[in-house]
Amino acid sequence: MKKIAIAILSLFPLFVWAQSDCKEPSYLDQINSFELTACIYSEYNEYEFEYQDLKDKTITLKKGGVYYRLKYDKKEDDTKNVSGAYIRQNYFNAVVKANGENLGINKDFFRFKHSNKTVYMLIQNAVDANEKGYIVHIIEETDMMQEVELSIKDAIAKDGKIPLYGIFFDTDKSVIKPESDKELTMLVTYLNENHAVNVFVVGHTDNTGVFAHNIKLSKDRAAAVVSYLVSKGISQSRLTADGVGPLCPVTTNKDEDGRKKNRRVEIVLK
Image (cartoon, helix red, strand yellow):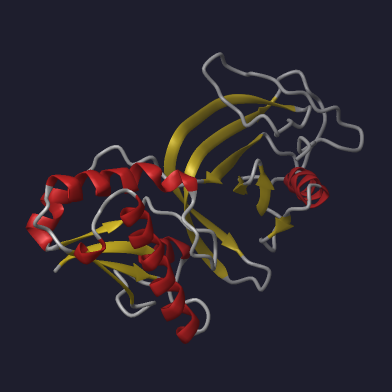
C-alpha cells in the first residue's frame, strides 16, 4: 500500500521524527503546520476506540495489536489557522484514497489495510476553529505473541483437556497452515512421551454461518489434525477425531475477539 499522504492542498507532507525515541508508522505523513511532540508505542497493546458511527450512534470497539499514540502540536512559528475539520478531512481523504473506509460520522475513525494487517485509526481532539494540537490512536490488528505456556501435560492432568490456539486454518478451510508446526510439534512430543494416553481431537467453530456447515468444518479440521499426528508416527488407535461446530463456545460470539477464542481445536482425554 502506498504511504498515506495526510497533508494535501497547500500543505507539504514531511515524515519527521519529533523525538529520538518517538516511533510513527512508516505509512503516515504529517500535516505541515504540526509536529510530533510525544508518542507511545507498544509491540502489542489493547485499545478501546469510542466513536460516533455513521448513524450517530456511540460505539465502543476494543482491538489489539501494534499500538501507537501520537500527539501533534502546532509549530510555534506557524501562523496558519488550521481547523480541526481541516485535519479530519485530510485524514479522511488519505484513507479513502488508500481504499480504506471511514467509520465515523465526524470523519475521525477509519479502517484500512497495510501489509496485510487491518489498521484502525482514531483522530482525537481535532475540533477547534484554530487547532493547537490533536492526538492519533492507531492499532495495527495482530495476535499477541504467546510466551507463557501451560504444558499440554499439566493442562490435561488438571482439566482433562487443553484448547490449542496455535493450530491455524484459512477461513472456511480444513487444510492446516504451516505456522501451526510449533503447536503440533508440542502435541506430538506429549503423545510420544505419554504412550498410555488416548485422546479425542475436537474441532470447534464460532457461530458465523450455517450450523450444519460449521459442524462439518469442525469435524474436517479435527480429522486433519489426526492425519497429521498419524503422519508423525502416533498410532491411529489412540486418536478419535470429532467436531461440535459452535456448540461449546468458551465466550461470546458477539465480537471478533470472542469468535477467535471459540475457533479452536481441543485435545480431550479419553
